[in-house]
Image 1: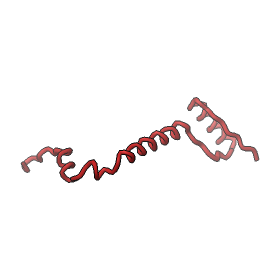
Image 2: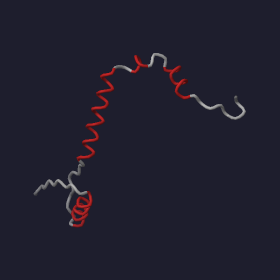
Image 3: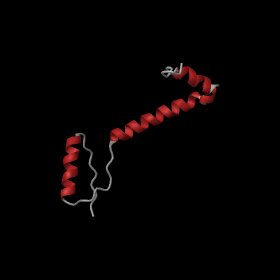
Image 4: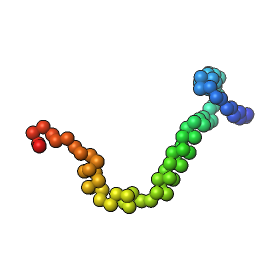
Length: 80
């Protein structure tokens, strides 16, 4: 058995290679996209920054009051 790892920058080329592999009945063991990995790393960094700021309970001492202020619902017809 031979394993080959490819790095393909053009998504169209990647799709062609995957189609060829399927046509040749080759087993695709793993397909990963660096862009997805990079976005995941960025999201993790943002979550870490949020965690460093502290607990939301400290930022919003009265969640019910906060929600009422934020939502500012429009009155329903006939229910003013």
